[in-house]
Image (tube, rainbow, N blue to C red):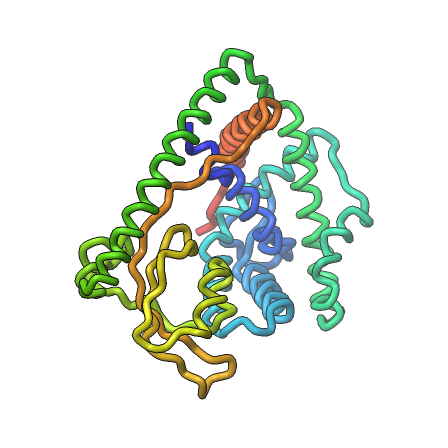
Length: 321
């Protein structure tokens, strides 16, 4: 049950997100091009695939000027790796749109491009026309998905809701008790260090980092420690070798040792060691109605996954030799 509260991004949600990205991989291919595959009569060619991937990567770079070349390459590879499967699923959704008479207006498609306005203004006319055509298909697929979602039965009975409320309450009590134990353990470790225990030895014994054999945390500007305002506040007043009491941050408690401060960098960089204590995830505080909505949404996502799989399975795919 706790998975419901821990992870709201199910496979259906992930698939929908990927479909939104993969809308730029739809092939409006010329009849003369050699097709990699044909899905429900729609041709998918390497030429159009590569052209649309280049467009998407270009927009990515224009929208994220600080992104590295490696980031852009990872994005390009993700698009290329998923291009065929997304084309097939989208072909199935477009088939459903045609059978149900679903359509979208040009204005509705244009709204999907609004967040990209700064990048679109720097495209050449051919690239912009392609982006607009892709946005129209994306809007149409989104309309089909919403149509499918509206037909799902996600009723939550009173008995199911009672049981869910009990499980949520039990988890909240368990999390609170575990939280207290973790705080006590972190305080005991800190007190041992204050009494002379070796920081590195205590880290090897108690730290819950992925690699407890090393207490090295890394070097950070203060801004990078925004998940721990208390640590941001006290670090500027510390000297190398100083050790903090347990502070919250990074999904747990940390006892931090300042190794050095590099003032030659702007902003200054703080090299830190740490002993990490993992805290349990806090259970959300939900009303009965909110919990019912959460359960219904999880069911909707699960059912949508099955529907999209069915759409995919009913799509006729041919791979020309």
